[in-house]
Image (cartoon, rainbow, N blue to C red; front, side, top):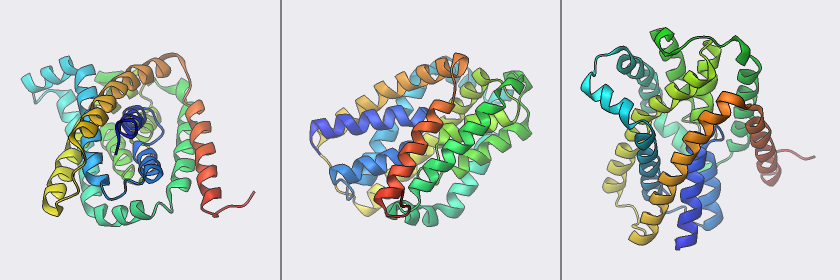
Amino acid sequence: MDWLEAAILGILQGLTEFLPISSTGHLYLGRHFFGLNEAGLFLDTMLHFGTLIAVFSVYRQEIFQILKNPFNKLSLLILVGTIPTVLIGLSFKDYFEAISQTGITIGWEFLMTGVILWIAESIKSHGHKSLDQITFRDALFIGTFQGLAIMPALSRSGLTIAAALFCRINKSTAAYFSFLLSIPSIAGAVLLQGLEMISHKAEILPLSSLLIATIFSALFGYMAVKWMISILQKGSLKIFSIYVWILGVLILITQNLIIL
């Protein structure tokens, strides 16, 4: 992997982790385009580490407050929201990894992401709950959607934001809670991937390329969080629906799964 490939993949990961268009699906496409399938696990670990840095940077004050008072309501909401994600991830890990390797379903998953975003945006006017009004049932529901995003091209941020809107949470709070909820999810992915990488002795990529990929992932992840907050305050999710629908159709055409 040369520096340009590393930078492109870092940009892809950083933007698509927090924009509702699926980082896993885009990384699958990017790795295959550059022929980096064998080094995918090690690369994914560093790219996820980059986005973890990004979300820590944006929400460093909130994280500090949670660490100071780990039993406040926000901390417990994040914990409750993480439980279904962990259960789904551990229960179906092998099955979803097998699907991810073939890539046969990612076109349909991009299309499904678009449908969910479109429906969520259509009911945005009903959102009224602020952060202190989120219930533990809401957190459990949102966490379940996050768990479903283990499918390679179902967007984690897209599904959690949509789930929050379904729970009548206002759009700004939906983004805020979605990104905070991503922290244990991304951190867990980094930890599990790191352990698996060590046990399987994954191919080591050049350190300079990995550093570039991680830096670009962190920088563009930071930008994506800020951008997504702004979009949800005064923009529409439907533009992302259109994007993933177009991408999904193109993938299905190239896979000869649909013929226009």
